Image (cartoon, rainbow, N blue to C red):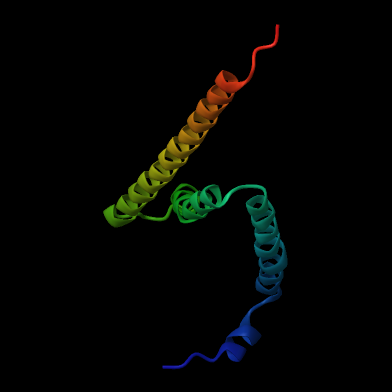
Length: 118
């Protein structure tokens, strides 16, 4: 019913300990350092979009590299993630288009009001 982690840890060999040490600080630690450095350089919508892609890319890599078997539910979930990313991308495009359209309209109004110089 309960696991005994100390017994399990004492039974693993040096290869497993080496993998554990490698996975902790290097794989996980460096990945999160790069992730947060990237998030600081972008807006919230882009960061949210890429965080939604992490499970999708992990799934694709597990199928491609580890030969994991994927069922229809996993593929349906991937399709939903891609649709969500497309919706986020379309929303961001429309929002930036409307902002630039408003900026151009206000610039045009300012030019009409400005006195003409001979």
